[in-house]
Length: 267
Image (cartoon, rainbow, N blue to C red; front, side, top):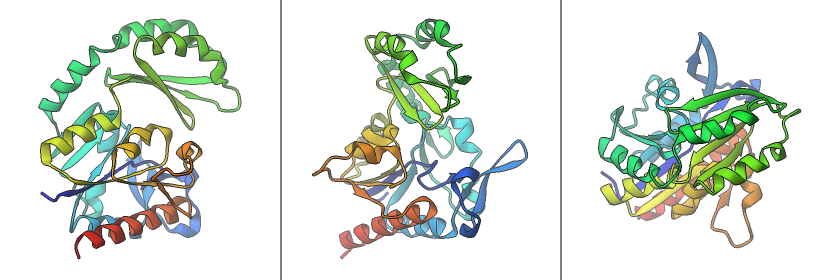
């Protein structure tokens, strides 16, 4: 076990769907769903993660559910992560299995928020707002909607978001998805547990969206992809390091910076 750890978001941080890649980038397929390649990674990203793992642990930290995370075939490229954080901090996997001690902790924290069944019931009158295309419940921890960005107006949900804020639930917008989560279901909840359990001292975070904000704020060294929406939240004087490039090139640049920073610890 190393004393350094890198917590990295996945989608649009180190892997990308078709609509975010260019043909000249020569991406490697890493996720197949319904017989179709839907996510990709670059060769240099793989190589950089392997370099990082020579002196620290690398922990994927994603809003994806366990099922969605396990669709990503990292092992195809020689990456086999001992730990992973899924469900936006709702679950921790150790060697692919749920960490039951952490699960008990989360079950306790969920009691601080209204039950998901009550929140979904409140949402019923909003389900048919123009622009909402899909409604999904994630592992009975949180739920989200997929919207048509040309038709959906978040202001139409103002009364709902106000109600659930008083019930200890938060709302996040990430591209075409709007997430509704109990306040303690966040990535930093899992980060704190892992760092306390394994004694990590030097912590690194990589992310792109507002849903990564608490993770980026938690870590000692935090790196942001220029193309993500969290860039709009950065203020002068913040500790964050922002990539100069976007897409795969931005991911590779950020990983290069992490490697350089970690090498300084090894002198």
